[in-house]
Amino acid sequence: MNYLPCAAFNYISTSTEVCTNTLLPGAKGDQGEIGEEGDQGKLGKNGPPGLPGVPGETGLKGEVGHTGKMGPIGDKGDKGDIGLEGPSGLKGKPGTTCDCGRYRKVVGQLDVNVGKLRNAVKFVKNVILGLKETEERYYLLVKEPKRFGEASMNCKLRGGTLAMPKTSNTNNLMADYVSQAGLTRVYIGVQAQSKDTDRTSSYVYADSSPLQGFAAWSQEPELQSIVSSTTNSSCVELLSTGTWGHVECEATMFFICEFPKSRRRGGGGRGTPASASS
Image (cartoon, rainbow, N blue to C red; front, side, top):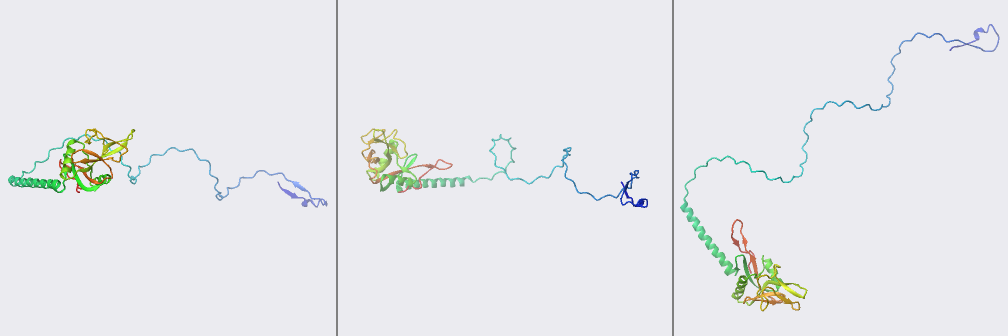
């Protein structure tokens, strides 16, 4: 809307008042030309995420990755079935003629040498070491006076135990051993074990087995001996006559050790204990 002053009409009126005339708007003009493109405006805030798209096609297979660490070893599997028999091998070359007579002579001489060696070993065991033996054990008379506990430890250090006459044959062999050595008594592996309810003690062998099937007590029951707890005679001695007697464990005397015979690997041979020397 345009406002024009009334100065143009002052020649008509000398009034000091200022007046204005209001003009009505004209008709709408023609559309102007399109202006130049303006500068790019600032980026607006991110809009909300759109809906998920359609899955794409599967990509190409990637390269093999690095080998991982070895896992724990699994349990042993079941034994498989026996496989088929393989083909026969090629026929070998014919052997050479054997001079069997010469080898028989060498083998015969070896048998003679082995026999001499056995006799020498037997001489060492029976004469030099003074060992006695049965089918299962060796026996060594140790001519060192010791108390019962010391004698037991001495036999263990040699690889054996105090001798345990569990049969009449073994008991007679040990008694003859003592007699031939010019002795009258030795310690054997029999000792009182524990007190019963009636304040008595029962006897057992050095391997803690009870006296069953054989005992050679002097003037006492054959199968087991019971001694009063009022005496200190809780150890046992073997007399040269083959009988057993009670003896105090603090007494010092000679003793007999026994050693089991060990079988050699791969055969039925037997060997003497390495530490069975007095």
